[in-house]
Length: 204
Ligand code: ADP
Ligand code: MG
Ligand code: MG
Image 1: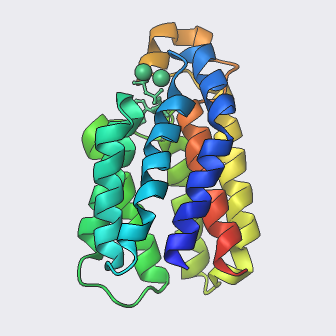
Image 2 (image 1 turned 120 degrees about the horizontal axis):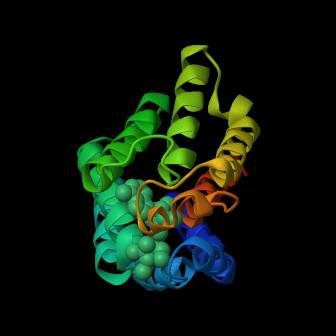
């Protein structure tokens, strides 16, 4: 199931290549979709080689592919996120709520270590951090992933859309200053698409 989810994420990113690139044309250099589609096409090509690997190694290999194939800010950031999750998952065989939270947290830490951004700077983190916070709170309240998966998608979507109102202070979009307002951040959308696919895939 894990590899199927990766395949679905790859397909979703590839399907949205033009849209992501379009968004990046507004406030960046118009390559976000192209960059990510290149990386996820390679991940799809490599899926057969991932079959017998532990989950941690799959994350690490995905991270390496994203680092080497995607390029740009997002290649380094998503690459580091997946490598960081690979390290966190090393030796783990149970995949419960706490491991899910830990995985997401390690990805956020990887992105922040590399890119030095915090919440509210109009980046992918503005999708991922609120989603993580919502998941954590829901689990603390005793809810299961099954109970809340639609809400998780909703939180990720609203957070992604909320980047429209933020002034970019990191990445290329920051060169635009106030003119970055009114545009959704491309990285926030790619993160949303990944989260959506994971949530939709988990119980079907
Ligand atoms: P580049 O800007 O190098 O062309 P991409 O277009 O592939 O790279 O990716 C741009 C996305 O990367 C942005 O939309 C934003 O979400 C994300 N990003 C840029 N800088 C940072 C950062 N320092 N921290 C987190 N995310 C960032
Ligand atoms: Mg770009
Ligand atoms: Mg670029």
